[in-house]
Length: 497
Ligand code: NDP
Image (tube, rainbow, N blue to C red; front, side, top):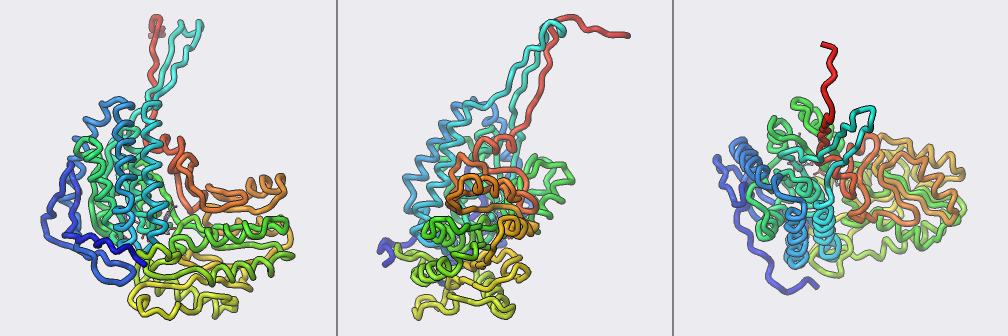
C-alpha cells in the first residue's frame, strides 16, 4: 500500500532565475499531470523570451563569480548538494513518482541517488581539473607551454521526461564542476524536480545565477539553442529533436552534447547463465515501464536455448506487479502520458498485425485503480523478424522483441543493422567471445553479462544517431571545458623581418 503520509500540495511553479522564483510576464501556464491518474498536479508558468533573457543575464553574473572560485571550493558546494539530495531522498522520490509515473521503489533507490552520486563525483573531480606543462627543450631556448582548462561560459541543459532529476544532475554536475553556469529546461511533462535541485543548490551555497531553471515547451528550448550568448547545449531527447537542436546551435557554433534514442541489442549465447540473462532482459526492457533510452529491446537468443529462455522470461514478466506508482510493491508504473500510452499500444497492435506472437502483455490486471492512468502491461513478442516496426523503431515503452540466431557473424550484423548506436549487451561465459563481440558492436555504452548499469564513473553516450559526446566519467569534462594553450618564450624573438 502507498505510504499514508500526505502528498505534497503544489502551488503554481515558476522559473528559477538568479537564485529566486521569477514570475513570467505574459501569465501563460500549462498543467503537469500525474500519469497514474491523469489529474493535474499543478500549473507551471511558461518561460518566454523575457524569462530566458533574464536567465541568461543571471547566468552570466553567476558565471563571473563561480568561474573565479577555485575547484576545491566549487567541489565542496557540489558535495554538499549531494548530501542534501540524499537527505531529501524520500520527498524528492515522491515528487518524481507523482510527476513521471515511475514506481516509487525505483525513484527512491535509483533516481535521487544517481543524481547525488553525480554531484559527489564531480564535486571530487573539481579540484583536480587543470592543464599540463611541457618544456620544449634547448632547441626552443627552454621555452615552454602550458594549457589551461577553462569553462565554456553559460551552458544550456534540456531534459527528457523519463529521469527528470537525474538528467538535471547529470548535466549540471560536470558543467558546474568545470566552472560553467547552467540554464536547465526540464521536459514540460516533468517540470517539478529540477526546481527542487535549484533549491538544494541554493541551500548548499551555490552563488545565485549559477543554476537556473526555465520551463516550457519546445519554443523555450529553441530560445536557448538559438541564443548567441549561450556557449553550449546538452540535450537528452529524441533523435529528431537532436537534429533540430544541432541545426539551431550551428548558427552560433555552440558546443553540443546529444543523448538521444536507441534500439539496442542484447545478445544471449547458448553458454550464458540462463537466469542471469533473463534477469538482464527484464532489466533491459521493463525498468521505468520501458521508458529508458539504453534499453535492450531487441533480445537475440541463440537457437538452442531460445525456448527455455522464452519460457522463463514470460513467466517472470507475467509475475511483475503493475499498479499505483506510489505503492512500494509496484514494479511497473504508469507511462508518461495518455498520448504516449496510445503510441505504445499502437506498436503492440502493429507487432501482432505483422505476425509477431504476443506471449504476454495483452491485458492489464482487473483493478479499477488502473483505469484512469496510462498503464501498459509489459509485452513480450516471440516470432519477430528484423524488419518489423517493433524491432526497428524506438517504442520507449515496455515492449520486448525476442529474436533467434545461430551464427556469431550473423547476429553481430543484425545487431548493427540500425541507425542507432546507444547501447548493447552480450551474455556468454566465453571470455574471448564476450570481448570479441562487444568490440564489433556499434554502440557507445556496452555491458557484458549484465545490462543497464550506469555508474557515474562510466562514460555514457551513443554512437551514430544515438548521440554526440558523453555524459558521466572524466569524459564529460572534455565536453564542458575548453583548452587554452599558452606558449611562453624564454629567449629572444627570432624574426626574419
Ligand atoms: P523530446 O526530444 O521530445 O524532448 C526532449 C527535450 O527537448 C524536452 O525538454 C523538449 O521540450 C525539448 N525540445 C523539443 N523540441 C525542441 C527544440 N526544437 N529545440 C529545443 N528543445 C526542444 O524527448 P522526450 O522528452 O520525449 O524523451 C524521450 C526521448 O529521449 C527518447 O527518444 C529517448 O530515447 C531519449 N532519451 C535519451 C537518453 C540518453 O541519455 N541517450 C536518456 C533518456 C531519454 P518539451 O518537453 O516541451 O517537449
